[in-house]
Image (cartoon, rainbow, N blue to C red; front, side):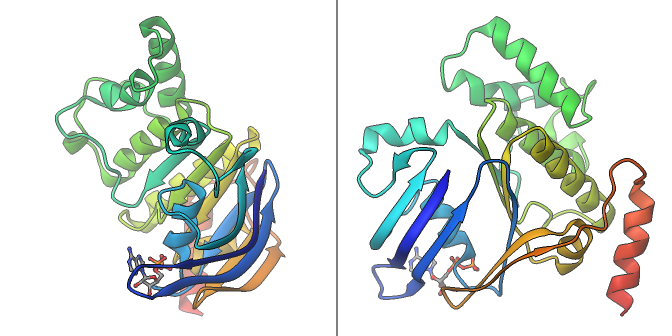
Length: 245
Ligand code: ADP
């Protein structure tokens, strides 16, 4: 579903952000992308959503050739993806309901369907009852869940999250991560860029490390997370323990 072959990205100022990377991500995978600041992680995500164009190589996402895609087709590509940002990017003057509905209005969905889906995704992220509140009346973790609901409302095949826990406290970041895992279990491919090694250790799965524009590690780690017997505090304790080591 995601295929990169010998992909390089050189910005206009000469910076080589990605150097000849190749990788495949299959439908339904859960992938962490890690690496130091400036390594090329955001560039990688920007290539996937075609915010940036590769300088060379081939990229296919959801059956679309992103090198030769026509500009007017890019919105159709993006409709197959949901994107969650570190800084939430919610519209302050709109209610929670409107923030989520907005993503469906943008594609011209009918009001009846919008209502049904917005209610369903708000329930999925545990935010029923907050429909009429404004983002600034919510905690950081809740705001991130609104942005997650907005990313999910159009039922994307791929969910891309760029440092989704960067602006929320550790307890809440566990909650957001658990939601990403639950969404993945429903079949959505999830790609998460994170700096948080502790979260990567707890949740395990595929980890791709980018360093200085190259893939320096691509491995599977076992998970310590069991959704059946999990509580927020049990992982928080694990996380604390790991941090102390
Ligand atoms: P990361 O997300 O891992 O921090 P980035 O993909 O943002 O890394 O950046 C990779 C490299 O590309 C860095 O050296 C950065 O300064 C450079 N870079 C990123 N965006 C641009 C741009 N629009 N123009 C020029 N250089 C850029």
